[in-house]
Amino acid sequence: MKKALSKTLQITATILMGGVAAFDIVGGIGTICAAFFTKDYPPLWPLLGYQWIYQIFVFVTLAFGFLGIWVTIALVRKTEHAYRNTLLVLAAGVVFYTIRVYTSLYLRGKAAPTNINWYFHMIVLAVFLLFRLPGLRQHAFKDPDDQVMNGVSGGLTSIVVGIFLAFSTQWVAASHTFQGVNWADVIKGQLIIVGAGFILGGAAVLAVNGYRLFANKVQIDQNNHQMDLVDIQ
Image (cartoon, rainbow, N blue to C red):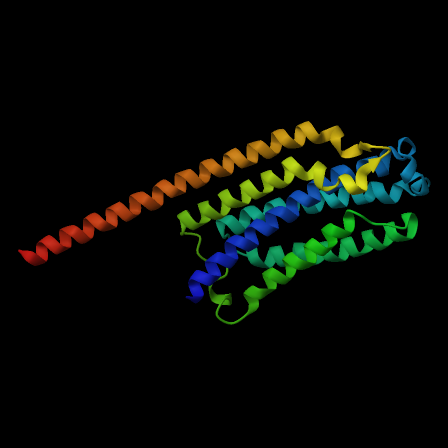
């Protein structure tokens, strides 16, 4: 029972970590307008003179996104130190987004949607800390040979990340719309294409591992049937 619960939590946590990575990548790209094209967006004029801060934010946010991709892949494969590295990336992310949120509040008076990413990092960190509990610790991301589960985890993560990317411009519309124009629509097409790729790739991985599960079940049934015949004889 505990092992089944641990597997379910591991898949859920891996999906959430993939979401964190996607959020960071999109957030880094989305900060480019504030960092490099501040004069083109009147609501961002309070940041004039502070662009250098947001230019740093762009590169650090993207760095966290790529680190998130790295640890997500490690979680799927259950490589050595994957869990520890994930905790470090999430904890560092919480610290970074705390600085970023309060900087935006001070300079602009608001921090959306960066504050949402900040909350998300804290929630996902809390989920991963659950694996420190007795009964879950010994099973946490320590079975690299379970290829089917690894495939299911990777496939579901890819699908969820794809959905997030494909619809991300709509989710940030409230904080990115000025005079009826959603600034995020500039990269809407690209995000939809990339998101669709993740969704299709994840679906393919799930299909392959579904076939493996079916084939393994058939093989087990055949072996049991042969053993029954031997017993009868």
